[in-house]
Image (cartoon, helix red, strand yellow):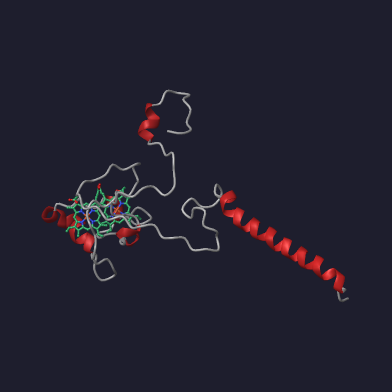
Length: 168
Ligand code: HEC
Ligand code: HEC
């Protein structure tokens, strides 16, 4: 059925109102959803691309940082730019292998790096520990992108029994 001429203005108004309503909803969504969206994306709507954060310069201070827990892979206290790390050559092991550390004064990779998944100790670095930068990252004075309230176990041990665990 064709709408009669007299209905046309009302139809137009309805369409316009609907469009305006939809626009308002869209504009309000990011602000309203701020608490729910990924903290790293911020208020950027999902369909849009975010602006990439700046890269912090790598530190090269040769100062080893405290590990936050025993099994944390320590951060790398020196630059690694241009170090070859592929199937043909491992520049990291050139300094960090057990037999190289007298000359290089690097910290030898620990025994876990020579162990396969069944805890057999191999003669050379284990394939699962070969690509060092899978776990170790260079240091930078970067600000945390998301908040966290991690508490070191050392601090937990010093707490009085029954103390509240939430927060710092
Ligand atoms: C030229 C020798 C050399 C090369 C190559 C090298 N390192 Fe190092 N690395 C050192 C020395 C020396 C230290 C001791 C701290 C310092 O002087 O920076 C060290 C420290 C570290 C530490 C700190 C360990 C801890 O207990 O805090 C890590 C992790 C590390 N290196 C990883 C790597 C990785 C991964 C690579 C390859 C991408 C690499 N290194 C390549 C010499 C080297
Ligand atoms: C699968 C993750 C992983 C990979 C891959 C890996 N590491 Fe580690 N690394 C660790 C962890 C976890 C620790 C701390 C606990 C330990 O020693 O196992 C560590 C410790 C170290 C340490 C400190 C040793 C000490 O006794 O203080 C050095 C140096 C190191 N790694 C260098 C390397 C190098 C060089 C490579 C590449 C050949 C490498 N790592 C590959 C996880 C990894």
